[in-house]
Length: 157
Length: 132
Image (cartoon, rainbow over all chains, first blue to last red; front, side, top):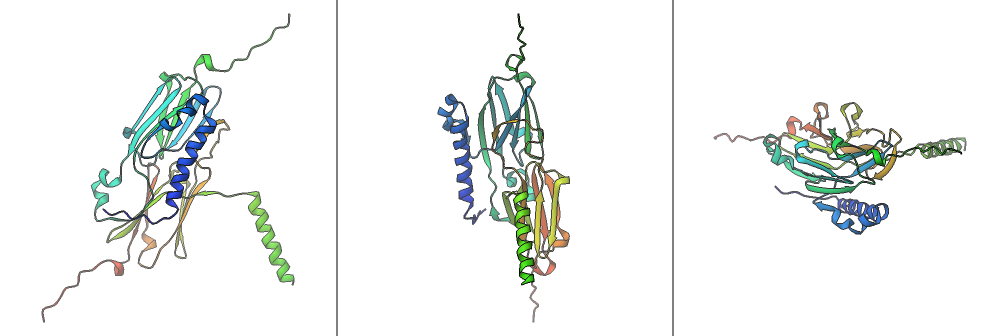
């Protein structure tokens, strides 16, 4: 099936995706990780993610539209979160959708992705919780007891 | 003159209104497919559920707006931020060959699928040749 792309800005957008993610790595990741930043991404594309934290856990949100939970492989080891998977074109997934259709525009990206996300501190890998809702993967990574901030009272003698 | 001043006043109030509340929209990645019966628009709108989707047809334009949850609703400390903030919005201009009254919308796993049927007159027809 012939796919015709005619959005002149699409390439720029993709370049900006790549540029932004690599640039942000160089600037915001710990030095040791930044040195290996080029090796952190493999695959055809890379899903965008946000990460937040509070005293108890890290919360990650990843945009993975149209991907089944069975096509996502998530693993946590110490302080590294790895997510890989594949977005399959719909034609392969469902024959009825394919029937007689021709693409006149295609901006969406398909293929495999593999992302390694360094976490600021090691987490409790046993109690990681992940759920997929409306095309967003929500991951909760509880912090380890020993890495949680503790308040120390100073006694005046 | 008074009219002009009125217009200027209105313009400046519009400008200040814009300054107060900057609106940024995300342009969702979209595929458009066509078959003899219909045109199908598929958009990636991760994070949008059915209640936060607004699809309107007005004066030949189909507007799709999808609101996501606030970027950091819980006011947690951010570590990485790559996902764009704001709502999804995209406008499509439909021509006379499509029937906007029968648009069918489906939302599944962050993908919105709009099926817009063609009007009868625009569908391909086989013309029979009568033997003379």
